[in-house]
Image 1 (cartoon, rainbow, N blue to C red):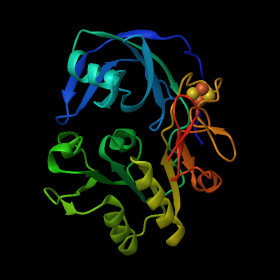
Image 2 (tube, protein in one colour; image 1 turned 30 degrees about the vertical axis):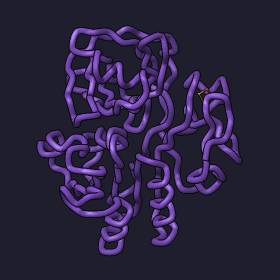
Image 3 (cartoon, rainbow, N blue to C red; image 1 turned 90 degrees about the horizontal axis):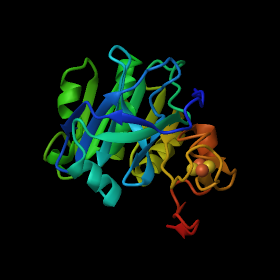
Length: 269
Ligand code: FES
């Protein structure tokens, strides 16, 4: 898997250069960052704001203009403040990037499935690889992320909504199975709700193709020190060995698709 050199363990203050309202609940923030060769889609950064730090997947990797972006869905106080109060000219703290991203070098045709804001982890792949086909899924038309961004690139995008207001009506996993059955993909990758990733993992077993999925666990240090993000049974750290895991690794994670741990370490099903 692809790894990043950990040369930035101290937060750097960046000034927001551009914001994009993606949906009524999702917003993208773009800021200057030196884009080096060791920054890859699927990695994450720690974002510091309101005296707290949270991991955020990198949604924009712009080598030409040395810009990076994150895409945030407002949920708790941290992300709601980012969505509602942080704008162009404001400053946030960033450290990273961290973790292992997607490693797609040996594959001929990739089916990438993004559920909701999980598409943020996959979108940068379209400027690194030319063999990506995307499923962008959301509950309804208004919550589809990056609709305009995908219009401007030469990538096949299948839209999918639970209520059928745009694209395929149903779950992304149903659409993925339809495409896999008729297609010649040699890997399925994804990021989104873990139940979605787990069902896609089961499809990878059923159709005997490879898979890589980005997992989300509560993180404190983001550096592999605190142990907060370790997964049963192997103890792999999502912040170092992940967040993107391959088929063999996923098969060893007994908690994958079943439970996670909260900030106190208690199991939440
Ligand atoms: S968040 Fe501390 S080890 Fe992963």
